[in-house]
Image 1 (tube, rainbow, N blue to C red):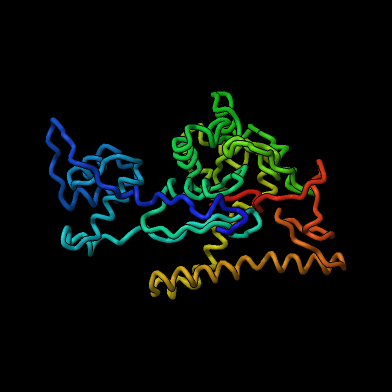
Image 2 (cartoon, helix red, strand yellow; image 1 turned 180 degrees about the horizontal axis):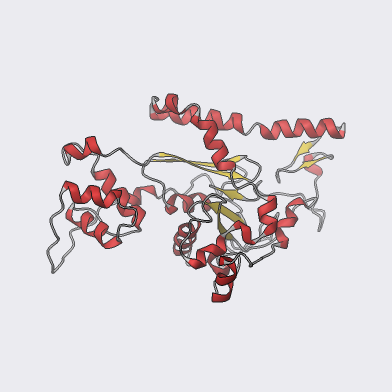
Length: 343
């Protein structure tokens, strides 16, 4: 993460907690015997009960705490050891690993996290807590899980309004969302096109501080357009971009998939590299991808027929970057360069 957008030199990464083992637990009832067929059936099932996953974890001697994704990660990680399950090592294809990246609505990558286990809401939360200025809207394919996990880690302070939904999860709103009659406007999104961002509040708490661009401390966790129709819980439909016409028109929620398509062309070469070479090569690819800022600046200078300067806010200006002033005063602008982010 760049120095202007990160909260400090040390960023949170709690991925190791996904596979932490627990001390022996005392149970009154004996655990049923777990064989290869049962474990394969549990992992292949799309709607496996959480109790079955917990029983399988306890039978194998690992922790049974956490979400369904955490329990699945522990089982898949155990099955990769040949000395434990030699047959399953051949049958089961290793899942997990990869790269989690956060991009703005223009496609610029701000945050990269190299994963050792399968992606979960914990990784998204680590990325969100790494920002100096928290994004107003966070768009991902696991928006509900991200909102619950992040609120649990921050004492319900991160997504305070309606648990990150666009409106209150009442029965009336859910019925209207089901029939596509619900509309929730966000005037603060239109502020993304304002001339200059606001000056950050002095001595403001990080969780309650207002975003310098949108001017609000409210934060939302929403689904991208590819996953907003797959939610079975009625209240999760209130995280859809279709509810807010401004978000639907202004934001391209497919920038992450577009960047993944760029990386797919080099997937074979990247998978053959060592860990050090893989990370360094990926950083170079991201730097080349983020060159879209330089291209945009060159195009705007051609249209304006004048040199432009790039301030810390990430906005272009005709005057030098050091002379940019706040629209509410004369103080220089100092803050991170981020607006809206997604996975």
